[in-house]
Length: 113
Image: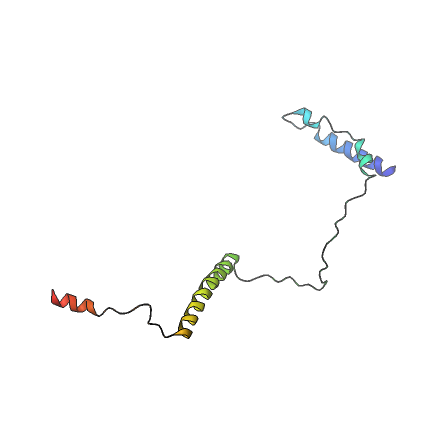
């Protein structure tokens, strides 16, 4: 009972403090009742129950690289890993000519004209 009295007393002090402040709509505060404080204390407080067990000696380590740079490097590695696999498979099956070949006929064409 003393607990409820203290809460009501605290609420009335708060209400007195807020009494002279300007408001746009007074009806926003018309539902406030100091008596409702005692009713709320009968309810049990909600408790968080974890669904997983984490080790108590878990250490949190921060990454030194920027998250954007780390993401871009991961994407680049994924992209290049596919290209490397293609090259390795191509080299393993048969010796293929290189993708880029130097043009030798361009000089001859310039000399003829």
